[in-house]
Length: 223
Image (cartoon, rainbow, N blue to C red; front, side, top):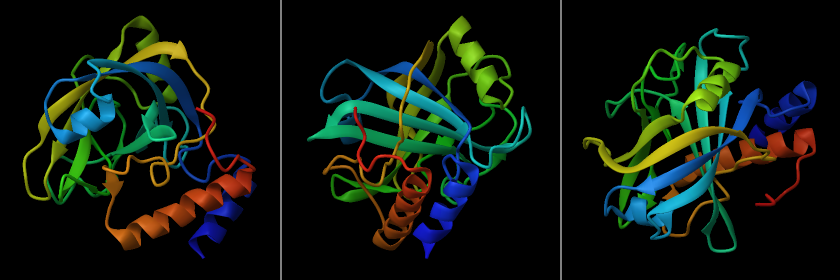
């Protein structure tokens, strides 16, 4: 049922069912802590090239409020392929980090994976906190223009279900354009960093699959 809904929506839009209007850019990820998540994302390297896509969930025009999306791909980040993470604008408190929340400013509030990940025997949310700077209106073109002038920086964080966020890495988004066919954190995850819980993962898997099929995207990423 879920995959059918997203397939029809993607076919109607001739694009992704959600987070369709977007801009893909290059970036750099730097591990800053010893947390297992930092190790898995960086592959043990101090610095790693990544691909980043910024988007708006409902595709509202210009700077209208929307759920803002930040997708990160680590090429070769898992055995046999890339590792994908998808963040939505959300809140920092435990109850709010699981809720996508609309924003009008890319730097206004934190981003969260919304669903927790199972890692090192426990559950952890992964967050992305804007590292400050002037107000950045919520259009993808505004983000790209800002990144062309100066890298847009986020602090990547982790938190247990009722714990505080703690920094584990830095994400620097640069203005160089890139092309990415699609992101799928449900499929492209590291075996030691798995989305949880199971029921919600299955629903999200169906949604991503339907969206890909509806717009005729390939079943597997090329990078």
